[in-house]
Length: 247
Image 1 (spheres, helix red, strand yellow):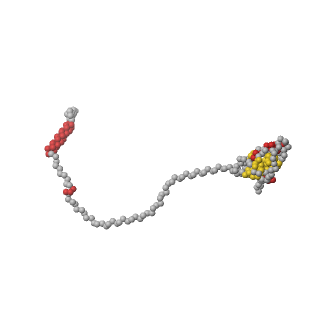
Image 2 (cartoon, one colour):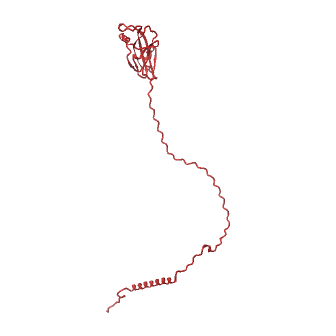
Image 3 (tube, rainbow, N blue to C red):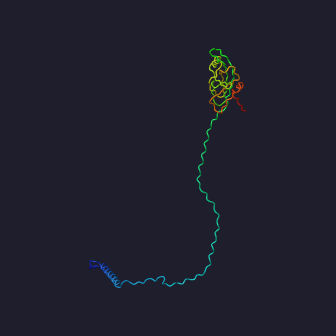
């Protein structure tokens, strides 16, 4: 068999297509340069300005047919005013209830009843005799407390009045009462619904008649009354109040 030999499609070196592209590029550059040279030789192109709007002919306006006049605007009926919307109100806090008044204590009340009887007496002791023109008398006092408070009772709260003059307890005459076993009106705080009694002696003018005994307790409220009664009335006043029977 004979040998088959092939030839190389291109010579060694730069490919053919590179040379083709280079030639085309050179022709494009030469054409572009020639265009600018020719344009420069001719000078700037003369341009004409656009005509002004006043130079343009007026176009005829089309005559439109007259239309009917628009109807006059009718008045809108007035609508009734709507009631104003209620305004939101912040609820006021409820007032605090007034504190209940504290119970006040009841005012003291009641009556202090008292009675007295006056009796003359003679002293058996030579050294305890009345002064000239005077005499000794002793008075039996009984006091009943029908009040709601305690009442202080003592002999210094007693006296005897004669012809507008007041006589107070006499110590020597009171001593004679004690020696005669007559109970002295001793100081005591008389409780409610209780009674006390005792004698108090005085020295008054000789032969005095129509003397008036007095009992004047001190420090009592203005709502308490002090009343003199007959001795015969005291038993009923000193007895406790009757109880009611519930049927």
